[in-house]
Image (cartoon, rainbow, N blue to C red; front, side):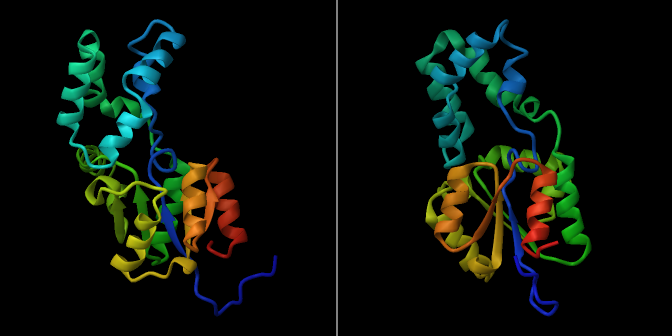
Length: 208
């Protein structure tokens, strides 16, 4: 790989949030509520499913989604309501190494952005709890736009709303489908595995 020219502009870094900056996983909560892993996994596969969570990321209000799920599975009402009322327990900690990358970019004066599949209610809560989520110069929140990654339109919205050129951006996301989606619209992208790996790839791409 040839090095970047000293006078070439640095790429613009665009972050995912869940599993990149925040250690979000519903299992962190539900392991406290189930006696064994198999029963918990069955509940998450059949009741509080990935697709149901995505519906809230896509713009369905939390109260509406919870009410519909309770009506469908009334015998699981306390467990379903925990998804809302104890949501913060799904994030036991932030991913410090990635926060350090974000801070380093801001400290040197770079503009940074985010594209996140996130519900409207919980994104507001997350910004209040973790102030580094307010450091971005622009954020595309799926629930606000009623668009979900990897829909090409959500990446293009970043470009049009903030005056960016997607070819000049590097997107960091843990989900391989979202990485493929970003590359399909002309972005460079990193499949996030760890802060150390992300930092190494950013250096190789001339961003750090």
